Image (tube, rainbow, N blue to C red):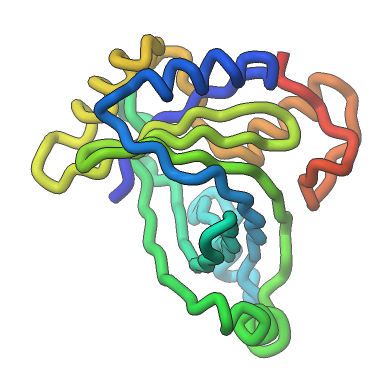
Length: 209
C-alpha cells in the first residue's frame, strides 16, 4: 500500500520550492530526471481500468538522466478508502524492466496484449529522500507538483507523511486528492484550452495560477 499527498503550484513557485527542499539537510537529493509515462487500458472492456469500480492506472514509465536509464511497469489504483483520512492510501505494484527490453515490451503490450494507449505525459522529477520519506518535485508541462510519500517500513505511514508536510511548511488541507490527469483536465476545462492525450512540453498547455 502507498501513502502519499500531493500539492500543485504554478511554475513561478519552483525556485522557492527548490530552495526549501535543498535546505532540508535530512534529505538526500537525487539527479533531475526526465520521465515519459504511457498509460494503457485493458483490451477487454469488462476490465476497463478507468471504470469507477476499478479506478486504476496501468503505466509504463521510462526515466533517464545523465547517469542511467530505467524502465518500470506499474499498477496504481484508488481505493474506496483512499480519501478517508488526510493522507491518500492507494494500491500500487511495480515491476522493473531491463531498459534494453523496452521496445520489445512495448511491442508485446500493443500487438500481443492489444492494450489501448489512453494517454501519456512527460515531466522532470527530482527526488529528495531518506529512509522514512520520498519527496518528489515534479515539473509537468502545466505546473509543478510536490509529492510526499512514505518509505518507512516500521513507522506509522500516515504520521510519517504528515510530519514531513509540517516540516516543509505545507498545509495538508491544501493537498490535491486526485491524479495528475484529473488536475490537467480540470485546468483545461477552467481555461478553455484543448485537452491532449499526449501531455508534452511542446504543446499549448493550461497553467496553474
